Amino acid sequence: MTGTGRRAELAASLERVRERIARACLAAGRPPDAVTLTAVTKTYPASDVLLLAGLGVTDVGENRDQEASGKVEAVRGGGVGLRWHFVGRVQRNKARSVVAYADVVESVDSVRLAEALGRAAADREVPLEVLIQLSLDGDPARGGVTGDDLWRVSDAVVSSPGLRLGGLMAVAPLGEDPGQAFARLAVIAGEMASRHPGSTTVSAGMSGDLEAAILHGATHVRIGTSLLGMRNSLR
Image 1 (cartoon, rainbow, N blue to C red):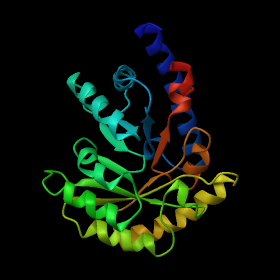
Image 2: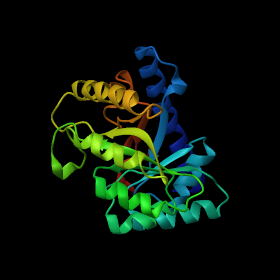
Image 3: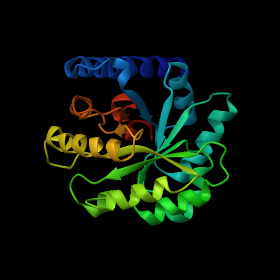
Image 4: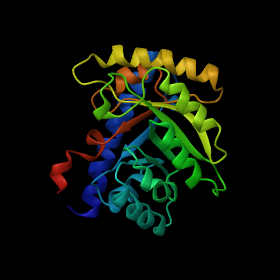
């Protein structure tokens, strides 16, 4: 596909996603600008990221360090500044690499990872924003914290000068009504904001469930397929 054709395709997809977000915000009684779209561009080339930036996308999510580091370098080499979110699971030995390019790490789910990121971010001019991944189903294979571990991790984040606690991230459980899951998330997000004022980010909702997430207070939605298409279509 030519660059012009791909731009038109992305523009049409972006318009549809923005319309969904606007309708969901209207239904929830929230202003449309209350929700930030994070374009999840894993497996897609830097050229797509540059096209999205030209269409007004400001936040981009990646989940694999090896892919993300090169892509960020290529995009920045094109003179484009974006806010980069790392949304995948972070191995502690990759903390320094991720901290070198990420503005936000959304998937912190242990004290040890928080400490590793804090050490890696110690010399940053701007603290690394951290979201704690909350497990809504208790499945360790999908990542996330449960119970009082949330507060142990949050205390570890706020005690690190190199980090700033932004709030929470969560993924809807498989096979459950996402609305019910995100309602639970909303309660815990309220507790987080009370315990750590200013930590009000809630990253929740993807292509299939963004409406439910917005209804229950998501401030960021992570959109891949609905924006960029099925991944195997470009491989």
